[in-house]
Structure formats: structure tokens, C-alpha cells
Amino acid sequence: MIMRTQLLACMAVAAATALGQGLDTVRILNQYAVTPNITYLTANNYESKLDVYRRRGIETPLPTVVVIHGGGWVGGTKEATSLWVLPYLEAGFNVVNVEYRLARVSLAPAAVEDCRCALRWVARNAKQYGFDPAKLILTGGSAGGHLALITGMIPESAGLDRYCEGGPEPKAAAIVNWYGITDVADLLDGQNKKGYAVTWLGWQSDRVEIAKRVSPMTYVRAGLPAVLTIHGDADPTVPYAHGVALTKALKAAGVQAELFTVPGGKHGGFSLAESLKVYQAIGGFLGGLGLTPPPLAK
Image (cartoon, rainbow, N blue to C red):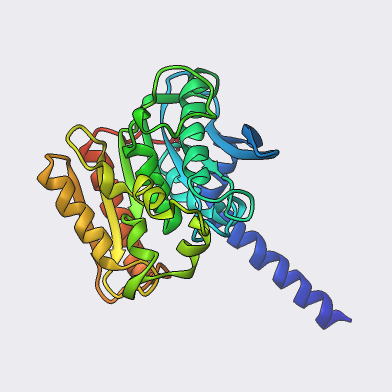
């Protein structure tokens, strides 16, 4: 009994020490408020929701990162992507974590329509939540990377804002694309055919036209937000060539674009050392654009 009591006491001390060392995490807990599951759009009897993470006690609007989850447009949840917000919270950003209609609810282009509406919601509610509408950054991985790209690149004239509330068209200041699809049609047939893309487009008679309509490569032109693409050159899920082609095309159009290649990298799952390098690159990229927030108080 004494040994058991001593063991429990040692475990308690160890836990307390570990918690005490996590001061950055405790500071985030103290300095941020979370407003979960805000419905930003109802379409096809489905409520698309988002979560807001915002700095407490700050009157000046802050740069805000809009996170869009991946999952091949057929799976994934914003909750499963919630840890993606942490690096941005630690850097002092506000963050919005977005979900959208998946293929089982609505086929393409529904997910794009939703994310466009989410961006409009962020801009429309900027004053209430302390977002800086001039400093909105879109990010996501895989299908989320694609949706971050298309949400920031597609013009209002494309007609994919039909479900959104009115107001001026919002503009993203930057996009951080983690191994996102840039040419959807490329994944429907041939050697790059992917089941998730086929499922998202379904057997709509105009599926190839829709695929081109929701492909970032379709909208490359001058005046777009700066784009940083992170991609492993051994990615088996989204061809590395997608990131290479988009970056090359954007640069040719005069858009600021960078490609951060993870040598031998697969579809995410990067090592700690690789991830640290990626986030250093993201920090440098956003800092160079003047999009980093004031530091958190110590």
C-alpha cells in the first residue's frame, strides 16, 4: 500500500511538472476564446459550420488564418484538423476552422461554394470577431489545400457564390497550400486517376467541365494572392507535379509564388524536423508579406 501511494505521488509530481513546463500552451488557453459550431451556410438541408479562435482583450483587428480540412472532398472533419490551429495561435493569429459539404451530401462544386461562403462570412463578421479583412490567409491540406487555393483564386464571375449572403467580394491576402490538388480534371482519368476525385465529381454529365471550373489552374492570372505551396516530391496521393505546375504558372503571371519541397516527402506525415522547416518557411513567407500579428504578451 505504501509503495502504491508513493508511486501515485510520483506520478502526480511528474504530471504537475510537465503541465508547469507547458507555459506556451497555458498562455494560449488564457489568451484565446473559442466559439464553436457557428452555422455560416445552410444548403441542401445541411448546416455548414465553423469554429472561431480569437485573441482575448485585443481591440485592433488581427491577421486571421482560415483553415480548411482535407479528406479528398469525401471525408474529414474540422474537429480532426483542430490541431492545425495551434501553430497559428502560438504566433498570435486569430483562426477560423471550416467544414463544408462532402460528396455524400452534395457533389462538386458544393464544397467550393461552401468555402467561398465561409470566406464571405469571415469578412462580413470581421468587426465582431476581431478579424482584419485585409489580412486573411487561407490554408489547408490535400483537398483542403485545393479548397484554400480555389477559394482565394476564383473570381465572383465564376458564379460559385450563389448561396452566399451579399456584400463586397472578400479578398485573401495569401494562401498556404499543403499538397493541394491544382488540376481536378487530371485526377478523373489516366495514370493520375484517383477514386476520391471520381467520387466527388460523380457521374454528372458535365463532370469534366465542372472539374475544370473548380481547378485552381483555370484561374491563374495577375493580381492573385501570394501562394506558398508545400509538397513532398514522393506524394502518392496528390501528384507533386500539381504543385510544380501551379507555382510555375503563377510566377509567369506575375504572382508571388513559392514552392517548398519536402525531399522524399509523402502525403503529409512529415517528420518533426521537416515540419519545423515548413513552419519556418511559412513564418518567413507571411512575414515578408507583412501578415504576421503583434507578439503575444509574455
